[in-house]
Image (cartoon, rainbow, N blue to C red; front, side):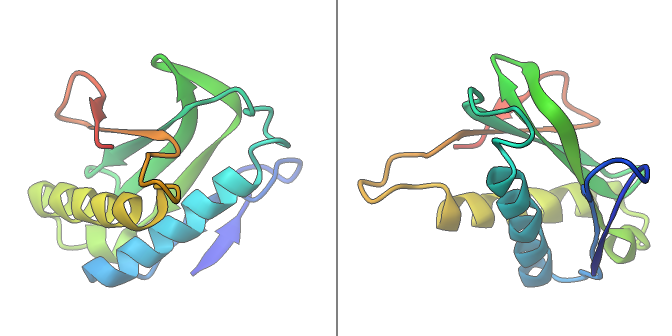
Length: 135
């Protein structure tokens, strides 16, 4: 598990995971989500109210970005690369595992003290035409 840059002059936004199980994937998803939230101001995304998680089973990754009303906000897209989970080659299993990890992450980390969502969390897969509200 490690961070890397897309280009030398950019921040580290790509995280490579060794996850093969749901608990590992959820933890790695939290690592990336924590970083995008932590860097929100530096990424010029302070006005964003939504997080979009795009699950790509063909290439084995999840991309995370700030959005407002289906429009990208901020300077960077964060990327969780999951090659070991992707090695199985079953897109349905990959999508289902990523959705389950996203649900677990959101349930544990996206609520304030009054159990109100902190951000609207949307997800999309290659097979869906529109983003769907998770929480």
